[in-house]
Image (cartoon, rainbow, N blue to C red; front, top):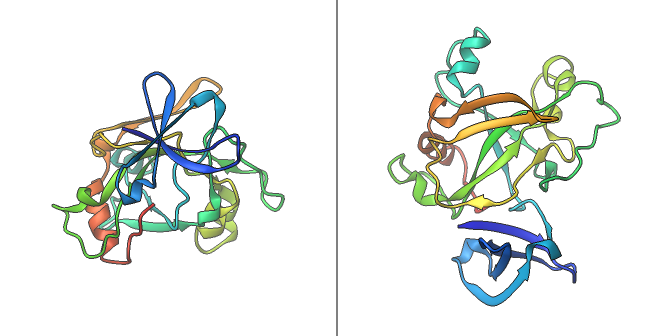
Length: 218
């Protein structure tokens, strides 16, 4: 399924299932089970939003083997967690705003985003994907000067408004550990990898994080 979050002509924010004919079957919140309302709208009549309004954005640094080798960095012994402010989330195709205090070294990174479907706490790797609603695309935008030189940690450089575009939808029928990752800039491929190259698998990451803090739906 392709789950979208959208704003309709009446400015209502709703969820739906994107169909092959470019219509959207309206549903209740996907975090309460997929229940269709019987209503539908045309894709061209709505504005697609970030597919979730995330309560938290938890991110993992240095998790691709090839990238670590290219950077001449040792593989981390455990996942490297950093957090982006939830206010950094924005929708697909929306502009990324250059912050006035740090406009000169804004960079992009194509990422896989895992969307948690139900509350997860102390879950095993074996059961981890049972807590996953699905996958979407993310852009981990960073102000590199803040991240790498000005600050002692990454939070500010990663958290400016609009620094986490998400979407356009959540895919529910994918294997998150075998997905191609690609970014393009003006049509030119800038990054290309596969989640099979991750140092820590998606199962491992969900389980590991759930033993640190409660993973909430969205």
